[in-house]
Length: 220
Image (cartoon, rainbow, N blue to C red; front, side, top):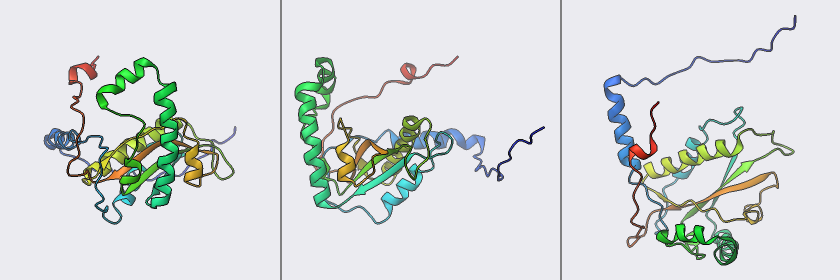
């Protein structure tokens, strides 16, 4: 009989929450996150040291398929890099709005008020480009890559919002130009671009509403 391989384990350290506090904590977190909005008008106010680093550390706690952690977070603060990013993104966005997007898609975007202009890619003090890391010379094959990276991005946005920062999720398509802008190898594939900073004093956002609970929750 062949012995099954064994892998090291450590005791699970669970930070328990008393039952009478659980709902209050859940509600408090909801109330903070319910104020989160996608912002397209950024202030030049600098971001406090290390806030982005801690947000990325938090994103890195996300679960991932086989614990491969198939993500890379590239932080752009150099004005020249951000200029190159904006120029390349706007070139793709012009094609999207003029030729690639269906009428149905454009109609869905109309209430948001977006177009090919992406000044926030230069205006925001920092831009985080999140890459999926696929199999390469120094990286193993990932599993459930998009799901894993998606969860990590959610934690990233929540952490930045908790720190009082505004964000935007931008997904130009195609995104291969980001490898060149960010000096990343071909096995890394851009998933989302996240400008980060403080909202401008005159920033405005679309008047949108979230779906009520009875439209998103199903109990069986």
